[in-house]
Length: 365
Image (tube, rainbow, N blue to C red; front, side):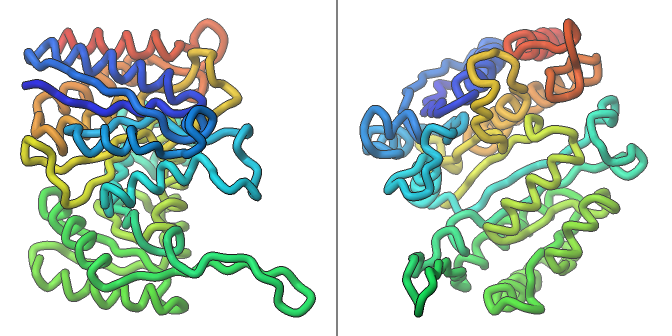
């Protein structure tokens, strides 16, 4: 198989973790006789600097033509001016919208030999293996109007949360299908006691649930869910929630694993690639970490595991995906640590060294 990949390294540590991930992907591809063809594109701050826009047409066209898209990170202090007319994050949001990537899958797993990563007590995170399904193209991040205005003698800012029933229904179906393949339990998280959008969310999710009688549906309010994620995380399997709540809760959930650097993600929609699989965008959930950019010390696990998701969802290569996941687990359980996982001095592995250990486990498997 030839794998056509659009690679958007982006800003900060993006190029470093993407480079590490591609080395692992190359090792898997060699093992199974696949050929990788890559097209690089600009996005985020570097795209603003070179083209004046965070999402150039050339990048978007390359993504539409690819089998899948691998992204590093966008943003940094250089482009943090809140009054700037264009910002790096607009590139990522624009890409999600343009490709209609309405569902973001963020798995959170606590590896058995690596429970010391987390600040949460080990007995609370034993067995944690959950997936958050976050609606990605609706809600407050995209709602209109979005403005600032003078009201009386005061400056007022307005953001609008909007959800249509079809937006909720399609991501709910994806969540229930995923739950059907796992432990047959789905928890929908909203704020239905206060927000009209959440009341519609709960109503539509409950309607969709009737089509999946084999899946147990539970509703949680988002404030309670934020507490349960820390003191009862193993009770969750598939979590379904809206755009803003999903953004916040998945960053919180990264604490269970011990570092944001460990968590991957896949953004999916209805568009199919030339192989008939979903055209997906794959990226670690961490940001651009400009304070450590260029030092070869970033944790590449989130990117490497994102590539496992890419093989599974956009290419149908389950064996390769499992090989990567087993290799990452083997590396972590062997004691391999980057600085963000508490390693210091000579014990802290560089980005390149850690990816090399993953490749060793992959080739040995």
